[in-house]
Length: 310
Image 1 (tube, rainbow, N blue to C red):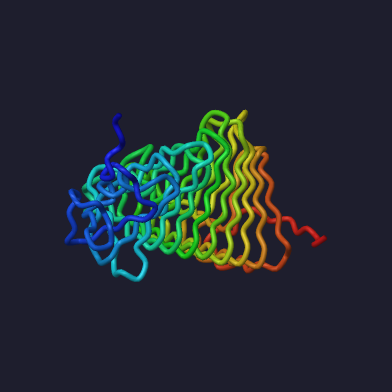
Image 2: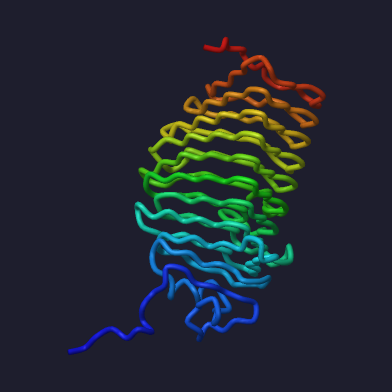
């Protein structure tokens, strides 16, 4: 009779270190050196933790897992010409990323996207920095969320900066675009999308599922193109974007809603210093609770109807 070798068993928690070795079992006393080295030794639903600062390598995730670098100094993923983290997980899998510094390297490296989500149940990104992803279209995003099924995205306490390709004016901070019948429920809390090509975009092109985005207590500023965009082309997925206690400042357009299936609602927020404050077209709808500060934009743009609170 043959029995599995104990060495083949996967642990529920593994460890990486800047001075580790991927030949190790990834235990706390014998850590691995990279996330790819550790993920194969970590059970589905388990966790990979960084013991100390280091560059732990780009990784593709195919199962539920947590990757965390909290309290250990900079837990980095530095890449050139590729994605930082790619998620190709199962329908019900939850992937959690905490405390990571994801860097696309020099601006001429044209790295693809910081986090590219293709499949999975949910993605949670907490307390991360994602920067310098400058690949041309369709890449160049800090977070590129393109689920093919019903998926959710939660991002909190995270900074996205210097993402997007200046030559083609494409890419940006966060781009949400399900594919096929995919749909997305997105919650962004205390997110700073600054100095990218675009800030935060929800795009219904190419899918029939809906997109629902909630943004609160966040800043979208200094982006070359639009700050906050909700767009639905003819026949595309309906997009709803709710914006609360958020600033959109010093972008080309502060708020942009396009297409009859796009709805944007804003309350307790600031839109200022943009070339155009509010852009509205193609039958899109936009409404305000009447408690926003929208001023000092070069072109004020569309008037936002005020709706009474219920």
